[in-house]
Structure formats: structure tokens, C-alpha cells
Amino acid sequence: KCDSAGNMIEMYLYNSDGSIKAMLTLKYDNKGNKIEEKKGELKYTWTYDANGNKIEYNEYKSNINKIKRTFKYDDYCNLIEVSQYKSNGKLDEQFSTKFEYDIKGNWIKKTEFKNSKPGSISIRQIEYFN
Image (cartoon, rainbow, N blue to C red):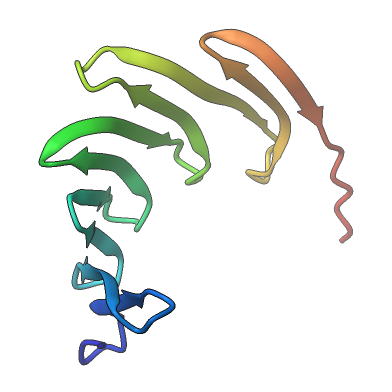
């Protein structure tokens, strides 16, 4: 079943004998971003910023928040941080990225970190033509 914008809002999953295994329901914001998905006792939610970037994701089981992830972006809308929290609210792990940009706003160096420890470095050279 779809809404007037063509977004799927309800779906049934079936067993091999044709009986209903589960029902999936979905909700969207006014920009068409998926903000909620439910399947039985499981629920997933998403929150977005004004640019449409995902800034929060939550997983619930029986209405108890099991996992929370937050997302941060730089001024160029590049994802620079993902933090995952345990059900008790404590930080579980964090991935971050540091970008260096050229004068045209393209990144030329990207350093990735896991829990503040450097992992990989990517360097790219961009040649501009007049």
C-alpha cells in the first residue's frame, strides 16, 4: 500500500503457505524522507536536518531504545562523524572524518578515525582546466 506521494506505507511479509508472517508500516516526512519503520515489536526512526541529511537513527525493541546513532556534517554536507550509543546512553563507538579542502571547495585530504585513532588517509589531486 502506498500514500499519495507514491511512498510505501504498508507491506505484508508472507510465509511459504501464504499466511501473513509480519506487517511492515512506514512513515515519511513532508520531504519524502523515511522517518519511521515498524515490524512487530521492532521500530526504527530517522531524523533529518534542513538539508535532508540524516542526523539521527534509533532502533527500538518493545519500545526500548537499543541503538542510537547520530550523524554530523561539515559545511560542504560531507559526513564527518557517526556516533553509536548503547541502550544505557553511553558512547559505544565513534567514527569521524577530517577533510582538508582546496580553494574551490573540493576535498584534497581525508583522514578517517575510529574512536579518535587515525585509520586511513586519502589524498587526491585535482587538476582544473581553464
